Image (cartoon, rainbow, N blue to C red; front, side, top):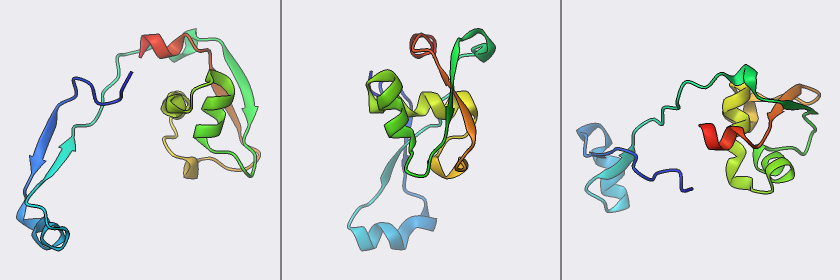
Length: 104
């Protein structure tokens, strides 16, 4: 499912960005609102422990466990660490079962 289906967006034409938009030849920027998730009890999902390695990123791990790199955000959401930069080598993270994808 695409990330931005039925998601609210706004047109940003704030004067603060005037110079940046002028340099890029645009009058405004369409920005999507922050995605809010349903209240999901994360403790109810079976998980697999995984140790973060030097070459890891959320795309690779999502592809490994879900066979779809587009679900990288599920792992970030579940661990409350949204980007690769939030993880450290040797850190244990939890990978929720694929059933969580249908509930978010």
